[in-house]
Length: 110
Image (cartoon, rainbow, N blue to C red; front, top):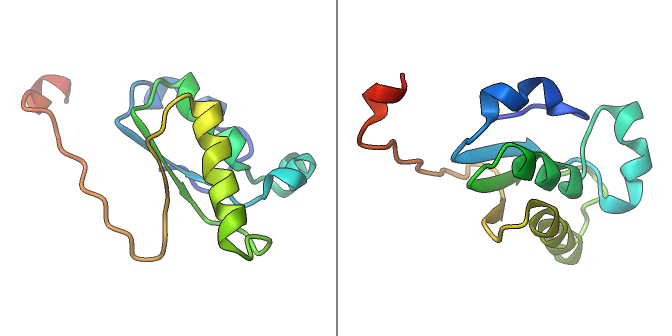
């Protein structure tokens, strides 16, 4: 689960192979030039990170004030899917609950 981040690269090793990545998506794609200055990400940036770490799924959170209609949200989900290379991308809403099942051999991984 990533908080506000422009570059989550320092977490690449720890997050590699994650079942699910929860990544903020504060900026609409048109404002990607502001990402570094504001220390926030776009959906494309989130999708690229999920692909980089070979995640199984991606949940986008923390949508900024410029997300004013459903089309912008859908465009961001589609941008994340394209960058991620997978269709398992979810736009989170407040109080969303997601069940992530542990593998049967979880003790072998701890």
